[in-house]
Length: 353
Image 1 (cartoon, rainbow, N blue to C red):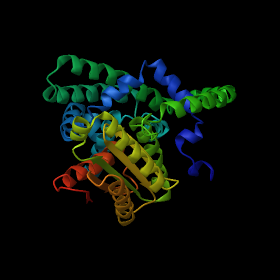
Image 2: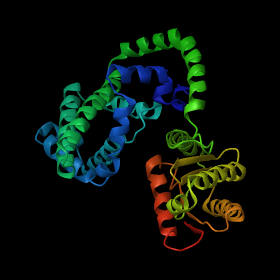
Image 3: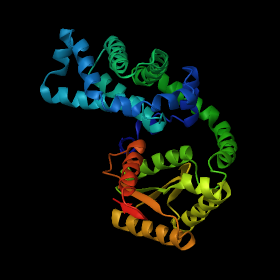
């Protein structure tokens, strides 16, 4: 008992990354489709209240639902939970943490005795609510059809985990599968690790690329949640970089980008994550770092850059993890990016927090 309460549901059920990927394959969920869905995260984020309102309007047609909810406080908790669930669908991360949340949904509803038929009807209402909301926000019918098709598969993927907690025999099957595949997983992980080293770096600066950076940051956010530590994000670019390329040539532009890669390698601590986001935009995740220290590191960045390139300048934005429940990778990067654009309002090197 004492061991179980210190384990996540994924750990209790011994669900491996291989099992998660296998199930994605079963539901024909490709990385490309999930990345496409993630592009519309900010679109749906601004209209979650509409989705939730439409969903409960449909759901409340059944009198049993009102009896099941019971009171206003429970209703508010359910709405808050649905907000997070819908946002997770567009999060871009469908890993062990994502699966753990789905298992928890199934476990909670199993404990209160909710029949599977209500899950299935709610799933249909939710898809309809999302479709109706997006139809008002997106004019391209082909895009809407693609999003709807991906969501259909993704929600079915979710339901498969939710119903695992209803069917105890599935747990034994998963345990057996893990024992049989452990050796294969270890050998596969070694091969994947070797390929990941090649695929994770930007070839020009030797920094992590945007995709790898988001993956690493996601893991660090989960660790920060458990250890109650802070993370600061430094986002910056080179002012008038296009003009540098146009007037002095791409060779000079590449030289500047490479130099920034070297500077970040020097100033970044062992635990930090430095990346090139694309073009002349860079992002540095400072692990266990509060805003004052992040500002100090940013000043060192500017000093070293200005010493080598006195005629150029950087615009720097800094954002900090808001709290230990803030696991939104895109959100914290976006906040730092917005601060960078505020810094651009002033000429010369500028830091905005």
